[in-house]
Length: 235
Image 1 (cartoon, rainbow, N blue to C red):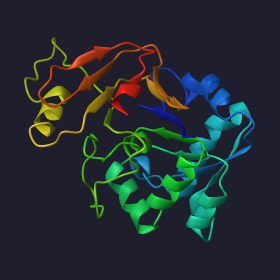
Image 2: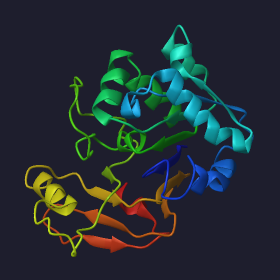
Image 3: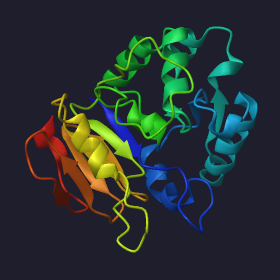
Image 4: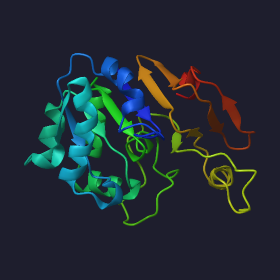
């Protein structure tokens, strides 16, 4: 049984790192004392140690320790021994490249499919989909494939933004780009707004956080779906 906590972002305006969802994370990771952290996405070029320290600053508030995967000689063994996994945000292209380089795609998929809790934020959430093709990130490096974990039968667009009707910018919107994706691809895309997350427990995947999400499907009008919607129909 998969246990997934898939968040659009790690930080919302006016709050500290992970602060807005710490009570829910405390429940999700109940009984777990140490989490394996994967810092490969390296936001703003942070070193793996710096990023791990930032992530630890959030989890220490709920008395959970983090250990970065880069601290292990054998990353595959580290995953196989992990009690829980957290993949942080940053650049999705870099993250996916590093996961492939360390032969971790199938390893992480296997342990999570067998019940190891998985928590992702931003890029770490995007890779739970069928592919990483709906990321917002620049392709600073090329992974060998866009295929990712396929924990979900759809893709995610994290940090989903609605058009600003007061802006003078009349260029592409997030909706425009996702619709362009659907001229070629059939995979549904869920736009997760800031402060939202998906909770997958048992056979149910539920939208949490109090905000609507936007569902895009090929040749269909986009749907606004409220918090607490069960997205199991996409699975």
